[in-house]
Length: 177
Image (cartoon, rainbow, N blue to C red; front, side, top):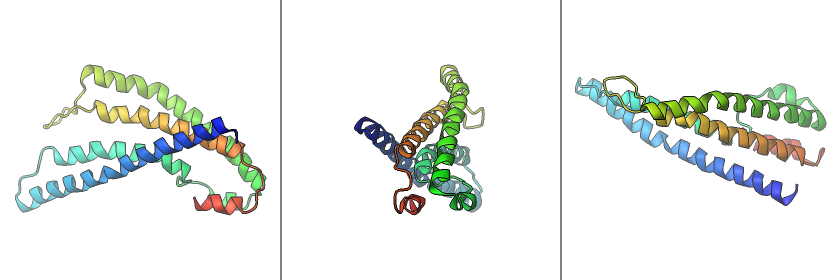
């Protein structure tokens, strides 16, 4: 793989690893928030107006920002039973077809999500609940995660494209990633 492309692939994966760690750290906020809400509701009969809503608002970015690195780890739903039966060349071809489809899908969703996130910010959109927090930041997580997913799919495509077909042990090592 040419050094410039290897640098791009490494940088994208590193950024997505950082986003992944940020996303999983949100669990350390979501769980105590839900715990506080449950204790307040059942122990004191005084549920919070903000607890469950904040947990839901945090869960969106948690889910979305983890996705690109999960793509790198091959952790998304795949047809493993079929792909295990393919030759290395056929499996590589499936990846070379699949990854551009992911890029196109992300680009289409990005086209629609960016204006929605911008409008949400410009209008100062809120949830219209009793607590009524601003929600533009959760809507901004959608295009951000789509950009990260698009870049990771492109990085994975380049990784597969520049991989030497049929390298010894390659198929099984990558399945373990």
